[in-house]
Length: 147
Image (cartoon, rainbow, N blue to C red; front, side):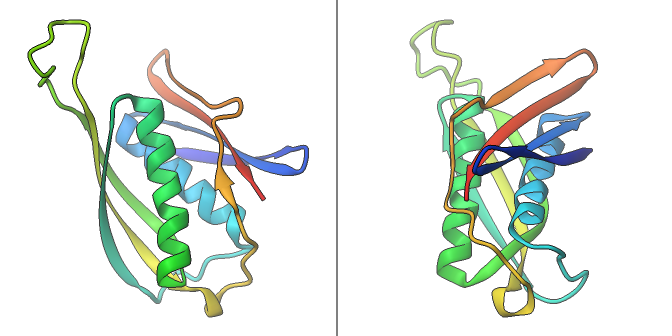
């Protein structure tokens, strides 16, 4: 699993690859942390858990990253060291194959106190140019954040 920060006009983008969809979500979230602070301390901060559900993979990624920004603002921490599990429920709600079900994420992050890092504010995640796709044997994502 890996990520790289990409310059994007006045914004910042994270480009990530991973072997699994769960690892990809964690890599993008780690990229968000890297975009938010010059460096993240290796220790300190308490882990917290969260769950997110959405109708599609892209919406799940968007909602997860948006939730991390919310948690940062409410808890006054920089979410770091992300662990994710992403699954698609096979319950199509009885509507047939046209409705594949819901995507769910369970995750945890280490909340590094904001006063322990030199953080810059990431205002929001955007759908602008968002990509989430399978490329050969790995998953790929590109996400732009408004700074």
